[in-house]
Image (cartoon, rainbow, N blue to C red; front, side, top):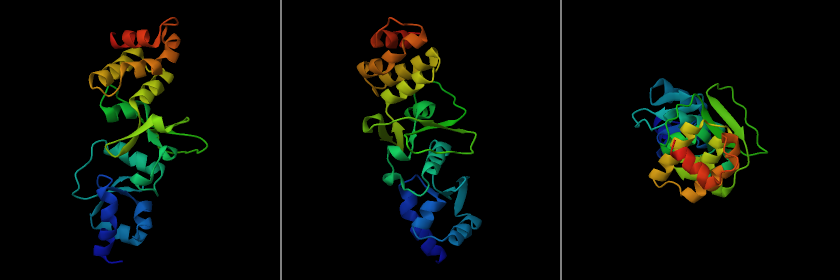
Length: 211
């Protein structure tokens, strides 16, 4: 394949993925691996993560490293071919996508529902295995992410400290990304674990957001 044809085959892929493309997506799109090598050597493609590249000159997307890690979960599939079964941004990483709270996670977090199992050698990636329904996920800026309600549920389930959990909940409410009734329902099962065994979900939510 000629240099120009190789670039032409990548354009439809990168346009919908903020300039990013995986090696497997490229080969499925018609580019041979040697064509990719030529593009990399020529500086047309820049390495982002193992098997993930960005078109040189394309604007660097926000949370580029998170996007690359998410693409690695199902590297052969384009963004619009993915569903919950292929991996969803979750927990602290979902909070980053929504720009809520003051979390500084050390790892990118994803949830993959069973029966699929995914293992990674990356020390900066954490995979949670848990069921997901269609109501638990939504698209945000080209990423499949757990909804605000599910994100709060996940953070409470791993016992994020109350101060940070309260900030996440407060920001979601302040930005109208979630309704208080929904967050209260999500938090209710965890009130006892946070030292409030007799609190309703709404009381627990108010306690967290007023800390």
